[in-house]
Amino acid sequence: MKKKVLVVDDEEDLTWSISKNLAKDKDIYEIVCVNNGQEALNVLSQVPVDLVVSDIKMPGITGLDLLMKIKETYASTKVIIMTAFGSADVQKEATARGSLYYIEKPFEIEDLRTLINKALADKKGFDGKVTDFQLSDLIQMNVLGRMVAALVVTKDKERGTIYFAEGNIVHAECGSVVGDEAFYKILSWEDGKFEFRKGERSDQESITRGWQSLLLEGMRRKDEVTPESKTQMKEVSRQESLEKIKGCLAEFIKLKGVDLIAIVDSSGFSRASLQNDKKEDVLDITSLPGIVTPGLEYLSKCNTEVKGSGLRIVTIEYNNKTLILSPVPTGNEWLFIVCEPEVNLGAVRMAIKKQVPVLTDIL
Image 1 (tube, rainbow, N blue to C red):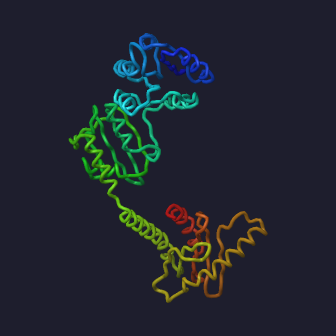
Image 2 (image 1 turned 30 degrees about the vertical axis):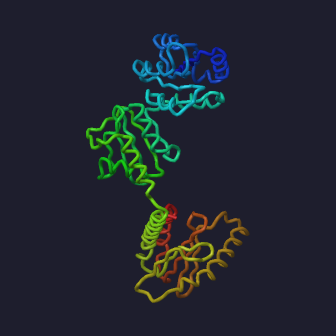
Image 3 (image 1 turned 30 degrees about the horizontal axis):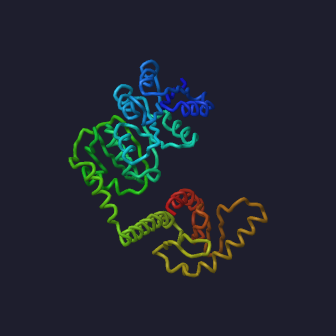
């Protein structure tokens, strides 16, 4: 069924212009224009309206008054507030009364069209990246809108939920942590994904602190992350990545006949390596640049000449050793494997097929 959009503004020229310019979207939604709040209420009482686009400053029933009545009587109808008197106070008041969309005059018609399409998107909730929004803004939006809702935020493998009820933050949980500390932990995340679940209530109330005090304390804690501590965190992250890489390499060392495996870049410098501890020194890792770089240059030339469409794996069998070279699809890393002649090459290939995607994600 075609959506219905109601535009409310006491400037007849503006409503005429909006109606004319948005007519190209008539296959998506129908535009109805009126010039005061009372006429808008009359339309709302007669036909279902999906979205109201309303000016704030109008004689009689103002835009905010209209928004209040829509929220009370037509809960499923969304609202976009237009105003030529843009200010933080006006926006805050609009949000507090339930408007999630706000546009300042003068605006480009394409901006309004984009906002209308966004508001009309048929979703039960919404999701997005926290980098697209400030998490603190999402929290304030729920509080000021006096929402009953759950804001679910995920970062990597962690998941946190903040519950709102009638203008308060009532509960937060993140793993085994609940209450204020869970809220602070979620707020500290700088990226991730969120999902807004309207109408979802918590069966717990672990937070009694006022939302403003809670938010300020959370932001203060977040700001206390010093450059030194950020550097330490990066070092820990690098160490964790290295441990994961070595975990993948260990799967090769478990294979009978594999003496050494390393991840090297195209210059031959080793990023990580493991050697079979039952073997004597197989190869001086520092010698790899002199081996890998000219070898890769030759292989690249061969690939071009024979139109190979990309190297998958190279196996070189000597009398006493077998050398295997396989690219990791990061664009710059390679697996360099030294084996005994009796190594099961099929098993090595299977390990490459299994571990390379894992290494790609880590690298």
